[in-house]
Length: 144
Length: 144
DNA sequence: TATTGTTATACTCTATAACTATA
DNA sequence: TATAGTTATAGAGTATAACAATA
Image (cartoon, rainbow over all chains, first blue to last red; front, side):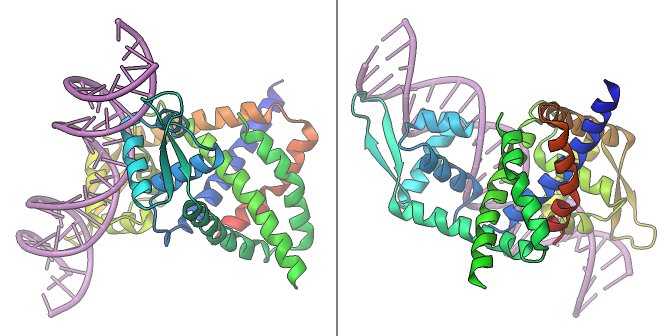
């Protein structure tokens, strides 16, 4: 059905533009953070997926093992995550987020959401309701 | 009004998660592109804002003049943009996108939108309509 | 003298290749 | 011998400082 396909492509274009622009704007709101984006991403992944080995972290972040070695070392130096020996395999290690690391992530997210909340305050309650209603759909689109 | 503020913060959280995740997923769809993200961004800016000086490009991309010098040189080397002398100021230059550059951007966008269009094909017509209706609002939220 | 852009230099992030320790 | 991780090294991308050309 060509008509449907065309409509989807046009909508896809609009969604892409709007989402990318919003994401860029929100990402810019991180400028005062003491960590680089690389460090923030790794820290957030460790928080989300619990204690994991360097290899697992590399897999999640889609970076090479040497890269992950470096970012782990820097975050460990800042006491934002901890390294402990693997209980059953001497070759591996387990990295976990520290309370300071979790606090830093909370603060970082709070700062980014503050800007968005200010923007949301400028639209009408009806518009907010429509936005809220569409959230599950957006989440579903992103889930692989 | 504290109630309203709390509601906005919760909504802001949901929007941030959904938008960031979608953006990340769409960005990943660029993996086969021959250009780096830096080059793609500069090329897209030159296309969008017409011929501009290196200084103007640096301002738009929010990078330093030396960085812009490098990316311009690389893109000029690939014949994706052109450099011409400024008509009235010998210190400046004007960079503009070439037809090959515009074609590359078209192809890059087509590839990214193809994934999103496939995703959109999996939701119901009613949901698509709701999504379409919310697009102007998303665009408005992102505009400064 | 001020402005625009480039060159010189350094630091971060990333990768591949070589190496060490453990399984 | 295979696997997990680190170290060695190299290549982008970015910045600040110093410089050259033009206004």
